[in-house]
Image 1 (cartoon, rainbow, N blue to C red):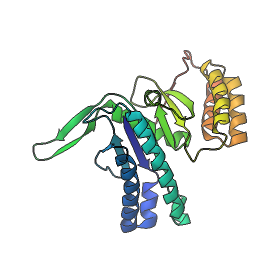
Image 2: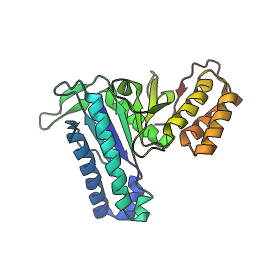
Image 3: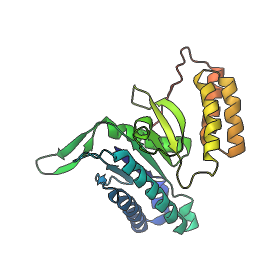
Length: 253
């Protein structure tokens, strides 16, 4: 089980803050993330720029790995939002992040050379998690979980199936879900219900009906995922695919 986060707008933040203050900001973010993960007995990969990777289930099995990762994600989001509020307004408007949860098999062990070894996780699990995290920007949401991660949670929180996609560089499709957190809209479940109705028509290839429903939801709730699917339905309606199985292939990371 992996949890991957990424800081948004690193380049403009670095330009606005300067090297010293950006370094301080980055360390404060890493501190928040580290404390959230270690409190749930998670393991930390090395820090790679503004990307943060943590994992559960190695070196020792953790049957409740998905629950631990979810709790860590919730704490991480709450503390990141509090931290955001403390930032100067010109920095706050640039500050953002995405969170991805994904579950599967991976290789875990020492990797590197004879001169230096680094214990960590490698494999398609990490690559897919990185693709899913990047989709938080595409749909403008804070956190996404794959079906494989969500299905392993003991008490899964409210969610909505956002999409059924093939991410760039992959051949197999995945289901991605937006998970409700403490910062979600109070009527999240109502939005999820209406989105699900529109998504059902979309999966059936009834793009005109789906487009109308997504448009209504995008306008009434200012819901960005609905806007994304509305525009996709409009394009698919004008240029229907020869074979439609309800899975969309994304060409961007």
